[in-house]
Length: 385
Ligand SMILES: NC(=O)c1ccc[n+]([C@@H]2O[C@H](COP(=O)([O-])OP(=O)(O)OC[C@H]3O[C@@H](n4cnc5c(N)ncnc54)[C@H](O)[C@@H]3O)[C@@H](O)[C@H]2O)c1
Ligand SMILES: O=P(O)(O)OC[C@@H](O)[C@@H](O)[C@H](O)[C@H](O)CO
Image (cartoon, rainbow, N blue to C red; front, side, top):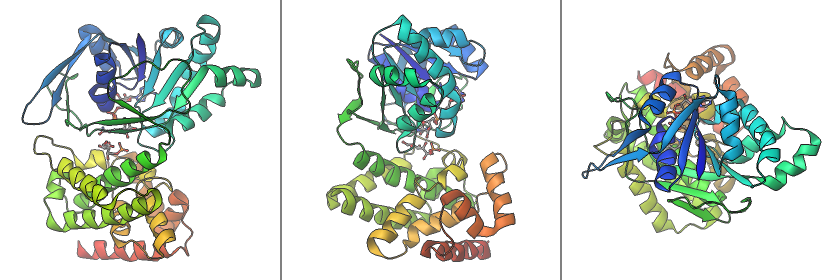
């Protein structure tokens, strides 16, 4: 069994690649980082360290890598042979990988009749559907029906905190013990190979929204409020009483949306939130605020972790959710100079103001009731500095 996985980064090695290898797949990572590709090919294995008291160490074997910028033919060859394709490159990179994926899938049509499932493991709603759209933009009308028949793009929700890594061995990856990989059954083609840890569901929406609008909402708010207080790690942010209570407030707001919309049991959802807060404060993990806060423009998107629950809360309950809007206000102050999206965001705010930025990146009309509250909270956070 062969799995081709795009993105040999934190989640690629620490979560998806590791489960695939443990399920008996040979895993070929596709990446553009030359050094990473070289070392993976040299060692053919790496270590995953579980960040808990047990300190368990897993050795992940039967792995190699190819560079998609320099070895296109190899990537296409592996795509024609693969039994499963997965990605963990980041939502903004999916359009970039769609070109080589489309070519690989095109050549596979004549080389291998076996249907193939493709799973984009990214923090976004409908990641695989988005990747499919990008792939389908690159194929002809005649190819469309063949692609529809042969290739299944399965949406999923992935959850495991994998911080940026700092080890002498550049392949080693520390991960939290918890993980969840929930895949939507409905678009599966052919025989989906068995992968340890995958849970199949008929309707993914309740699960993907529960994950994104709880784990990632809480994470983002702790990161932006933590950055505002010049803290360095998520644990430091969560140890700050004010931030912890702001995160709890925001999660009770997004929780109210999820409970009302999907009928999750209220007490079980409270326990889900509690568990997530414990995960954020795991003493065996040092997760940098600037990693969790990365790509603020993406995180300001209308369907992403902050604006999405805030809008849904307002529509369902007719009130502005002040915990969520405080997180959005803190995001708008995120000016980390090593994050190109933070630089662009600050330039936009300088030129077009808070209202202009919210209109441009979140499609929030200026007269939407959320906007004036977010603006006031930005002023409040600024004045406090
Ligand atoms: N780290 C986490 O805790 C976590 C948890 C759940 C989901 N995710 C999601 O997983 C995805 C990856 O996140 P990550 O933390 O592993 O990021 P990362 O930066 O550690 O890894 C991304 C990898 O993709 C590679 N890459 C970039 N452009 C590429 C291209 N054109 N072709 C092939 N590879 C390319 C990079 O070189 C890097 O190795 C994101 O969507 C993220 O939201 C992350
Ligand atoms: O990966 P991002 O940038 O969408 O979000 C940053 C973190 O919140 C995220 O990587 C979490 O660690 C992860 O989603 C936990 O499952």
